Length: 184
Length: 92
Image (cartoon, rainbow over all chains, first blue to last red):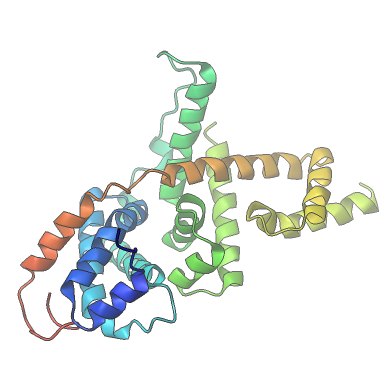
């Protein structure tokens, strides 16, 4: 059985012109990156375009990857920047479904205990609250609390110092709590 | 409110983010938990933020591990016109 090749080795091969190595990187990161991007742009079609564009930019910019950071950190940074650039261009956040439009059923008439229904409602409210955050605050929350990246990794992706990242993350968490509290 | 309560309240507020990120020592964590048991502000805040954190992490789990996106992206990359034959840095 062949040993698993690290991202950094694949990136080095891709830098030398090995398209097959880059294809392996695409296969390894496409789904996860798409999931992150979709949380940032809130639109499936837009997320697909951003993900494609991210890999194209990564391929074209591979010469700039120095290997002093992890490949996925470098890749996600391109993706996050591209997602935020699109958000600014289209100003879509204003048209996104607002938390105000969210209707939460106080009681679930369907099967299952009430506890499960409340949990589902809370999850729905949380998703809406995250969507309504300003991108500057949504991004740290998505990377750290939803994707489970470390503070160091997520801060590096955003190009922030850990202290600045933590400050934004805490503000995002408090904003989400405030938004959810109004609807539960 | 007693001076001790005020001191513990300040400590808890300052270290709450670190508590959520598991960056505190056991002693610091216990100190905040003890204060949260008595404080009508910090108790609900801590419980909510810990609960939300668990739920948010759950939203990310299982999403996007199927390998389904890669083929479409590779198809897109192969469709990009070759503007430059030199790789990397040129067209796909």
